[in-house]
Image (cartoon, rainbow over all chains, first blue to last red):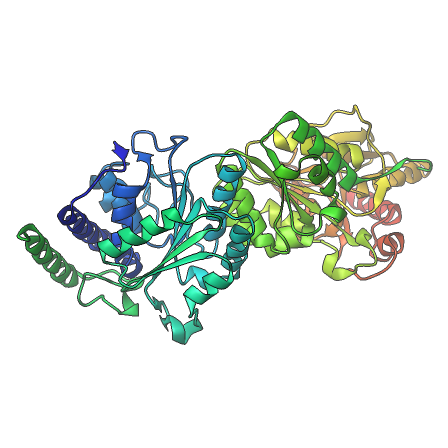
Length: 286
Length: 315
């Protein structure tokens, strides 16, 4: 299957709900994994993988594809959900997540499942890898676009800032980086643990085109930001998405405790009930 | 031992990169503000568009190289051994080795023979921390020609390769046309009483030691173990089966280095008495290269002493 395709507003919302169901079910089945940051990344992944990226799920290494590289690789529930839902592999295998012998490793390998560009899991590595890919394509005069999805946790690592510096130095305008800025990390509020604010000013000072999305779960805002980024040249681009950790599951929202914890049977039931209710609301929308 | 030609190993690195650059447009070079010292400046002059200075940011340099390799380029990363192998170890581990990315590393300034710059710049740990990584190939060439051949050979391997070389000119002990194969040790001199396994600049010291020992009636077999990983199992086992004992010699920490690799192999396959010559759990210091080699016990003298000691232990 070739992308991009056009989704209706209703389809986008339904696909986001499906991803959220996948995420809580996978983490529950594995009894481990990272639901909070997976849930905060859902909308941008739906928009990018269905509606923006030039990809072919039957030919994952297609030479002319756009590259989407995950920097926050602990969000494998979201990663595997979106890759399987667009057709890189069968969503029926999602329940093997984190189990021995599964292709769905806790943090992704470069070699599987299909659709993964780069292994990762050690924060601060893949912003650097992503701008290396952008540099390599630009140096060879290739037109492929490169996208990365990072978190503010990534941006506590020094290597990331080295990478931001070189991306600007080499004027990598084929590169757009998303920051899923959900303000929480394992030990608590980011600003209490190790503050990264003001992120937008920092990117600007590093000579990046900087776009801030006020609600990173609002498809219209995401779409507008991605369109705007397309028009900017001469420098790399960052889209900072203000998001909610645990978005879409009431008891997980804005709760750092759900960074890397699996829901119990009872909690899963509550989560799925909420998501089913949401789905019904969307289906009855005009 | 006298009259050997003296050449820079880093010149071998630079010359090979240019040769590769001429043959393959996919070969690119990255440096971290040390191009003039590592001599990758010569590649930059010839191929400015295929040379990327990343500034003093080794972690990003390694991952940038990884990214470049994902687009089909063949990156050679260059800086001092301490910074490439140490500062960016986890980048090498998780991005490059776990990702099986086709990135080559040139670690310059290995050993105390770096001289006046002192301990911070004298890499003594790279063999240990590079050989422990799955998928990694580790080569420590002995002279200019071998460095050049190692670099050319590394380009043919699809995966990470670490090549360690030094700062100072070292005696030429191989020839432009001697055989060089990654993973295949070279027997520089045959002998029957003791096997001396050396790498890097210690190969010349081992050859000198063999001449001294010969005069005392001891026949030493000299193995140039330029590839630490994958290690040449057959060559080493066959040699110690003949001699019954072994001395290892490296300009590197003894802990975990080339000698350790040799003894890991022999202990499990054909255990014989062994002695080690190397740096003994200490950092280096400023000084002239030769006086430091003497102070830290990295000369033919120590190789001779250890050889005699190990021969006695055979009985």
